[in-house]
Amino acid sequence: MKKGYLLLFLVFSALLSGLASAQSVSIERVNPTNWWVGMKNPNVQLLIHGPGAGTLTYTIAYPGVKLVKCSTVENPNYAFLDLSIAASTKPGRLQIVGKKAGQTVTQSWELRARDKSPKAQGVTAADFIYLAMPDRFANGDTTNDKFASLRDPNMDRANPFFRHGGDLAGAAKRIPYLKDLGVTAIWFTPLIENNQPLTNEGGTMRASYHGYGFTDQYNIDKRFGGNAAYKAYVQQAHAAGLKVVQDAVYNHVGNTHWILQDLPMKSWLHQWPTYTNTSYRYQSITDPHGAQIDRKVTLDGWFVPFLPDLNQSNPYVANYLIENAIWCVEYFGIDAWRIDTYMYNDQPFMNRCNAALLAEYPRLHIFGESSVNNVVDQSYYTRNTIGFPFKSNQPGGLDFVLESAMLDALKQPISYDGGVQRFYQTLAQDAVYQDPTKLVTFLDNHDHDRYLSVIGDDLAKYKMGLTWLLTTRGIPSMYYGTEILMKNFKDPTDAEVRRDFPGGWPGDKEDKFNAAGRNARENEAFDFVKKLATYRRDHPVLHTGKLMQFLPENGFYVYFRYDATGTVMVASNTSDKPAMLPTARFAERTRGFTKARNVLTGENLASIASLQLPAKTAVVMELQK
Image (cartoon, rainbow, N blue to C red; front, side):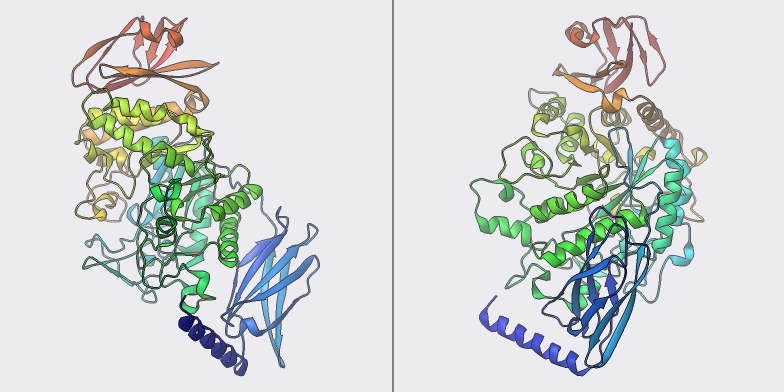
């Protein structure tokens, strides 16, 4: 910061302090909004905000609660109170008392008992995750479609860039649909309040329907139904045997976030002399020869101009984010975290955040978004076996490299290094991960071209890719609508890959949540996913069984999942012609087996000495003696 600017800022802060001294003081907000007794970590830091809140002298008189420290910052409207909560503390309401020159301010704050409802169950390779964008999935309550009091009061399904009214009430009605499909976990793009105005992006006004511009981490957006609707949804999902994955954003917030309206201190955000965008170049982070400025621009540059970048090396920012993450797990009862823009975060902060969550919830799974194109860079952001100077403690991650490899296997011609060889080679490098089974695998998502369009609307390839997804290692995830053959490219706009699920809105002409509303091809796709997902759910060999793959030859790719209870063989013919596959080369895994059952067709094979494979087909076979 230039000296003149710093002096101006300090003078401004002093003026604010003097102004606050002359006016009445009050407490308008306490975050976290509540806490719990019996947490493993007895400490919590309260953010106190209100006119002159930082000029008060605080006391708390409640059995078992000790006010360890009160900290003030540049803005006199903030105070940070460090509390220690003894293990013997009883639930109840305590009073936060602030005094100053004859003025007394009292704010009630609750310590709750922890409930015993399911939470933090984690997701594992036994699960099948369904990713949905709540605004575009289903609308169950038309009364919360729009609010005049919000900065964006619009709702218009005819406009692809505006909100469309999907909500948690609508999603709750579709829980039986997900169960029928064989899904075991639901992941929504963020539900947190996005009270953002429309933004002008390339001359087009766009709403933050995607959810990635938080304005208050302690409120679920009321257009989705608010906190009560989310708690109810999680309870309904758990009752139905579904787990819930929450989408977290630590790197940035919306530019109308309530804290940004009255910034606690300049260092709350990453500041630059002039606006600096991230380069989006992840190579500079792991490059042992890289320049520090390149690394700084990647990590501290803003993701986009309207999403201010949080400075997680600021301990108050770090505490605020970590405590909110713990609060969400405990308050809503979620089971896993997907972390947005993981690689742009301060990695020591991420390790601290992950460790705090896992200390309270050891079964919780955490998997972040680090969109890279090679396994070395991808492994950097999870527990790995490479000698990086920084050691990540993230348990999982989204497997972008395997996504690319599977799509190449479906799109590219057969060659020495191309086609299905890309799939094989990617898995062949799994030694870089401490546990590759914790990676979340996928074929598309809300930021990518839809799977069916990428593979040329080819149903045979569609089935082959989904067979790989649901039988190889990792935790499979599928984007909403893939099961009914929704398609499109991001060009000209990402809204094209985020279209409404047909039948999710009252009055929709087509209802593809029901078989009667789907055409024959869509039902064929749905039934295929359902059959394979259900088989996978019911057969642990596809969760925890070891993976052995054989080098692809002539477009054939064969791998096995096996354990003491059984062996499943997956044989793929990626060529465009039917072919006979001799199996003698696979004796290492087929020895002792003479026959098989085709999982997808139910056909019994009296001999597995050779297999007749149709073009562009993967068969899944239970080997039998």
